[in-house]
Amino acid sequence: MSRKLFTCNGGVHPEGHKDASSGTPIVILPLLPRYVVPLRQHIGAPARALVRAGDAVLRGQMIGAAEGYVSTAAHAPTSGRVVAVEPHEVPHPSGLTDLCVVIESDGLDQAVEFQPLDWRNLDPSALRNRIRDLGLAGLGGAVFPSFIKLNPEGAGIDTLILNGAECEPWITCDDRLMRERAAEILQGVAVMRHMLGAREVLIGIEDNKPEALAAMRAAAAADVEVVAVPTLYPTGGGKQLTYILTGRETPTGGRSTDVGVQVFNVGTAYALHRAVALGEPMLSRVVTVTGHVAAPGNYEARLGTPITDLLLAAGGALPGSIGKLVGGPMMGFDLEDNAAPLTKAVNCIIVKHSSLFPAKPAVLPCIRCGACARACPADLQPFEMYWFARAKDFGKAQSYDLFDCIECGCCSFVCPSHIPLVDFFRFAKSEIWERERHKHDADQARARHEFKEFRLEREKQEKAEKLAAKVAENKARDAAAAAGVAETAADPEAERKKAILQAALDRAKKAREGVTPRNTENLPPAVEKQISEIEARRAESGAAQPETDPPRAES
Image 1 (tube, one colour):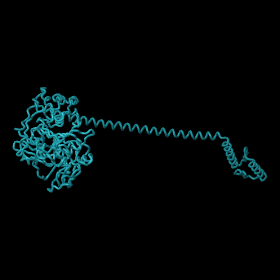
Image 2 (cartoon, rainbow, N blue to C red; image 1 turned 90 degrees about the vertical axis):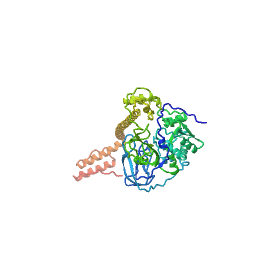
Image 3 (cartoon, one colour; image 1 turned 90 degrees about the horizontal axis):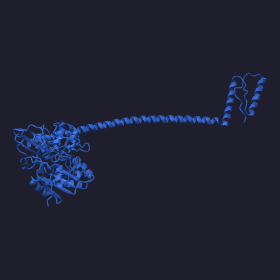
Image 4 (cartoon, rainbow, N blue to C red; image 1 turned 30 degrees about the vertical axis):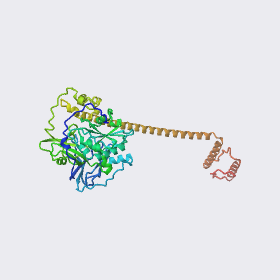
């Protein structure tokens, strides 16, 4: 019984041009004398360089470590010597440079010792970390780090979808990979299924690829269903393929994982097989070289291969070429420099000719015909988003679900006014992201300022509290001392002893001054007797020298 398929709204039927490159087997490029390996070949933070100029490296050696959570590693495509770690041209719509490791091959192609992974018994978290260090990223276009997508995220994934639709014109690298290496792809699918705990595995392939469908069905196990889906662009979109195969609609602003589905590209499954079965990092990929070249076809090239060498492998660009396109004609971008290297994100190089890619007509005003809305596979209103993006009213554009746009180019393809609608949407998204980044930075700065003010106020309060405590302690000590004096003054015995002591001191003082003390009140009788005897002897002898010390009482 065939699976029930669901129909997405919108979509277009551009001319395929796939026969030009799909008829020949994959060609493996020979070793080159020089490779340029960008440290940013994935969504997220670029890898952190682990080598510097002059270092010797081996094939498969990690030369860039993942930096942050959304990141993955980079590896040397061959053995040789690092001649530079510097900015270099890269294949990117901006045309800007990025940090790259330039390796000069020694011709030996010596590799590090690869260690296969025991994926059935290895702890899932440890397995994902190993996959991260092996540099795996999605090869379907988004180049999202694979180890993140292989996390079931708590609730788990019940359906695993392998995307073999390859719906964009000209591109045939996935088609040839499925025809020639179906068994290895299915082994990678088994690893994905194990890691995600998926109960159901579906492989979606457009029905214009009968050879790939046959090869995958022959290699698939009984519990893996290979489904032929209608040929319609953009069937290969993750959300669109999810809906076609399962009928589950991805919520606005969400991902397929929100409905229990995870989607991978067939190239990613093949790379995962090589990672776990051989312990090999992602060192190469299959790329389509087609268009106005002598030998269109698919080539397995090492990451970091200069695109100039890829074009030479395809016989070189023929006379009359007018530029190169990275990716397909619907979502691709113009290549600014042929010296840019092959990255994980590059699945196709198209050499343009005026007969294949005629000059774009002049842009005319929007007539609000609604053709773009009818063609939109995400059920958006592109003409409304265009007006607000053009007016830089980004808040209003966002209110029309701007970020649900997958930038497939269907709206631009059908626009009778030839408006580059997707360019406006990309512009609006980038502006919103930039404003969000500035807002985030401002919020952080404000939070730091508020915390500083709080800290200074807290320190001021703590100082005041310490001072108040010190004052209270001193007051308490003074009060205790005053209470002790008052207690002493109220004691009669203490007063009597004090009076005796004071009298003795007074007599001693008067004796030193030549005056006989007469204040003998309260003296013991024996002392008074001694004093009387001393005075009598003084009177008899007429002695002039006074006693200086008071007599001591006999015990």
